[in-house]
Amino acid sequence: MSKRLLLISNSTNYGENYLNYTKPYIKSFLGDTPKELLFIPYAGVTTTYDRYTNRVNEVFNLMGYEVKSIHDSKNASLAVENAEAIVVGGGNTFHLAHKLREANIINVLRKVVEEGTPYIGWSAGSNIACPTLMTTNDMPIVELQSFETLNLVPFQINPHYTDTPIPNHKGETREQRIKEFLQLNPDYKVVGLREGSMLLLEKNKVSLLGNKTVKIFQQDKPVLEFDNSASLDFLIS
Image (cartoon, rainbow, N blue to C red; front, top):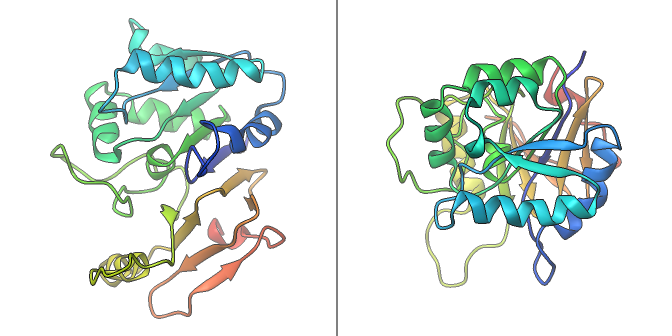
């Protein structure tokens, strides 16, 4: 069975309710088959896991799903193995990776998704689907033994990607930082995933969802830009 992933740039567009723009895409991705979803709230730092789970559950209930959090499970590995679908929320990617290793569920997460369990992530949840977390925008608020993550896709994602420079700010643009990463990690492709957009991976195909374009970066190659009519299958070939 092929992997099925919905990798979302951000949870909330400006002026909208939480996860509002994602709902039709999530509903289309999941369909009516899974009723209970396993939520992983470990990226949350400035909120409790209970509050985070309740907030997500309110949205998913409107779509006909029930969300149960992994932090309420007595056996985290068993919860992952038995999950009908897995949802990983945004927040701090370093804290998320730290807690996944602490719970010792990196390998079982990778296994069940490779075997076909649907995976939805946004922001940090999209970052950890990549081989490493090195293209996150987050501060390293905890020290990690390794930057390696789930490696569910062979490319890197930079969520919240923007071309817009901050006024009167002379620091690096997002593109410059991605090119720094590629200078030292030349074998990767990096997807600049704009807010309001997401990548769908299923049936060994990759497509862009939403009405924004996406940028693809590779070392020593022109930056490519695609809209949602393009095939992005080359990202996994």
